[in-house]
Length: 292
Image 1 (cartoon, one colour):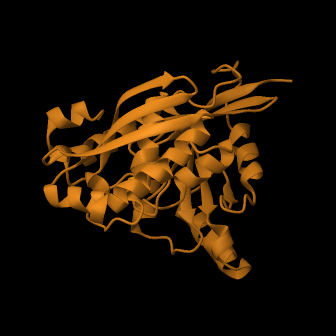
Image 2 (tube, rainbow, N blue to C red):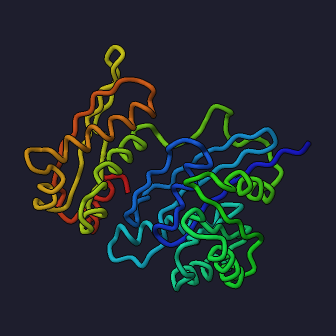
Image 3 (cartoon, rainbow, N blue to C red):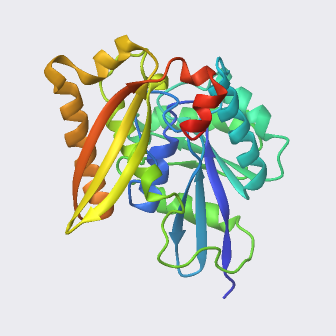
């Protein structure tokens, strides 16, 4: 029996369900999810091990029209990733009409050598007739290698999608060891979980302004101590993140600590500080310091 291994990524306009789908396939929280667009900033690799194949999922930021230096760097990252993978799944939500953003990305993908398939996401939000119409509309966008409807929320068709994607991977030995689920350093994953908690419920002007850096992390007995800084761009945003009598910051700490304990499988002490880094999205030096 031949073994297949390779790289795949899901692309689409912001909020098309890419990261949620990656998590559903791997069965573990690796890419952070949020109802805010542009949540993903790092290319995170998640590895799915099967008897006959190894699928390495690359999670990229959404392609968008950039307004800052950070935006430009994220777009460059996306295009570099696209040129290096074997299979690309274009995610289009079942509950929204095919739009300009979908056409724009389809055009960008047409010049690549990767196998491109369409993934119609969020099928649990529509009835059968709506889904049938959407599948037909998506099929007319381009000559996709396959069109697969899925729901990451209910798990419907997720295994089918994995079968289809791995079917397009090249014959190859294993690329990663069996016990590896992601090559992302723990500290980056932890910072992402804190950022996800900080994004919950903040007003729309804030998402892009939040960055998190884990400054220190060490074990003390059966406890892991983590010291992290949450960066915002303005003093007024700092007040929003901290909240009245530090209520918001406590909430962020509690929520992210639970996720981090689940990730590490041990008790965690988490110490968060909110700091202002003026206009960091436009400042090359600050971007470097914050890991971009």
